[in-house]
Length: 192
Image 1 (cartoon, rainbow, N blue to C red):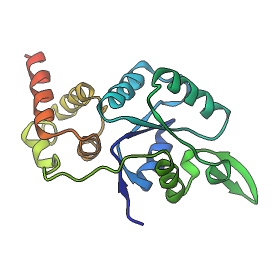
Image 2: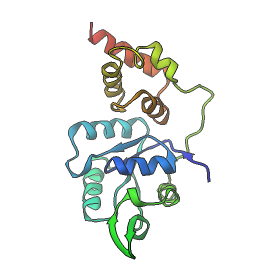
Image 3: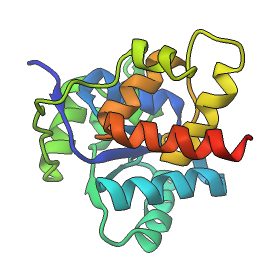
Image 4: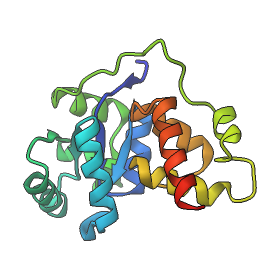
């Protein structure tokens, strides 16, 4: 089955969970960074909730349910996707040695997200932001690009990452060239 593109951002616990979800679907994926949930992560999740909606997908264990409860209290309009414990178990010699989203097959993750009534993102006629666009704005390939990209990513609520991941996050978040340019202008004016 081909990857499906989701409108909503998927909220997971950690980096390995992010990678597993990205193997299953094309979507913006945000991490709580585990139990601690730093304020920056919660703000990024909040911006995604307002912009495009969120689907919470946590591990089917006690810690995952506690994280889900905290997120549900903070974001009551969020959708919730659930993996069964067997779908999220890593087996060794016939015994479960780990439980988590990162262990689930792409099909199980996709099925859980679709069961949560995830909205399929419609491709638009507008071209996505490209690496060439980032280079033209000084967001890639130039001295200071990393710091500028981090500032623009913070402004747009997509976090900091390398240029390739930045393009993917812009697209998955539905951020247009015009929105990117507006954020770039805001950050450029602040740095003058």
